[in-house]
Image 1 (cartoon, rainbow, N blue to C red):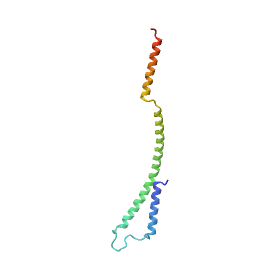
Image 2 (image 1 turned 90 degrees about the vertical axis):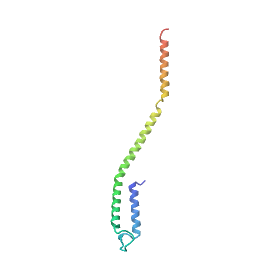
Image 3 (image 1 turned 135 degrees about the vertical axis):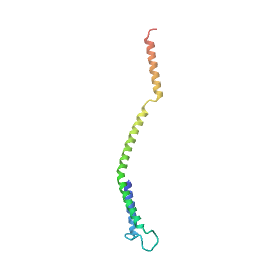
Image 4 (image 1 turned 60 degrees about the vertical axis):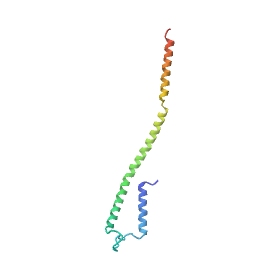
Length: 117
């Protein structure tokens, strides 16, 4: 399965490929016709491209962290499963109560037989 960064890079490459196919590579955004878009569009697009690069770098730093979190979560799931198994094997409160009453009854019976009348 592709990572988030790889998917992002693939989408970015696809957008770049489509832009070049349309023939807009190297063509200034402000065609000089006086309409269609604000005159500061080139600066705005440049800023967006810079931001996209920063986002790409941030995703690159986050990917190893997410991998470690995923690994830790899987280990935690295994530990929780083990604990569930142990808890399931523990006696319930009723079982403990019956056991204690049984031991008390046996002790009472032994004492009654052992003591002279």
